[in-house]
Image: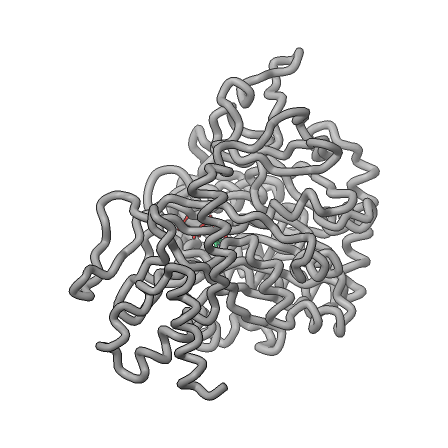
Length: 477
Ligand code: UTP
């Protein structure tokens, strides 16, 4: 079929599916605009969109998941919270061996829109550290470099972007010389996208030549890993596990040997880290078991009284909060990301979607006017054999930058880093003045290349001669 016939065919399909409005400005578009619009339209699976509208919007299939037979998921307690120290030591050594054997890659999902933060640019480029104002991407790059030199390996770093931020992300790395990583070891790929629909199921046009499309959620990572050829590339390299984390979590232990070790020892296909929820109302998904399968139940899907249930010791029953840190088997990603019987479910989100008016101008509505469809990575858990969950310490693994102000903001991320640096320094015998929240009285910074854990700090500090004075603006690298 030639280009003309293809265009005709596609527009007829949209008409037949009741989606002809997508081409309502066709006559006014330039040749280039038409090509752009056709490209977007060709990515849309019309029957999938219709099915999602029927099920998730009309059918209300999202109105809460079945909670019958739900139980809290078991987890491996942290050694500082009564966990089995020997098991942790063994896991740590197994993880180290896995790293030394070159079987691990790091994987960051960075395709989100970051609307709550309201920052103009990919979230990974956001400056977060207290003294050097390093970006999130730089912090992770240095954590990976630290692991490379400790384990004598070269850990590839996969970064999933989206159509909204792909070029800006790649340019940022080029401009900063990949933060000292080998450029060949940083693999970018863009995730899939989905059109938004209005209350009648009509695909929304954002501008005369632009369909309102948004990234298909972090769960889109599995199929994007397969489609982009990343899985094949990993397999060729003999890499068997992915260390998965989100772009907004400055404290994440990007490469954590004990976590990787538990995953390997348990023959788990997808492992997760949990933290005990601060209180019943903390907005974290909750690790549960249902019909023998591990799953994360979103906080909005569990009734408040159930979230508040306590055991005989007064501890929350549904304690295990999900912080979106996983280890995934490459084989598992291949199986689930290839589709077929393993399709992850979509969820709907009611949002304010910029829309083209009849005159072709884009307006941002005051109220939600349409639905976006997204997949969530934790929905892969029920498909995973031996899904394993381990406990981690919030102060060493979780401080996300979500909002411009208040909780989970740049300020809390900075304070949490300062507290961590202060704890490490104190463990090395340095006396520091801290306030009642354990925050030091001044700003200083520790590069992951100096130390990426308390144990590493203590060792590096011991060998420093002379030892620097820690004061406002000190940077240890
Ligand atoms: P969030 O759920 O916090 O969404 O993403 P967001 O898009 O970053 O921010 P808001 O909700 O618009 O304010 C959690 C993680 O999942 C990634 C994000 O980049 C972040 O690392 N993500 C999210 C994707 O990679 N793709 C998506 O489609 C959605």
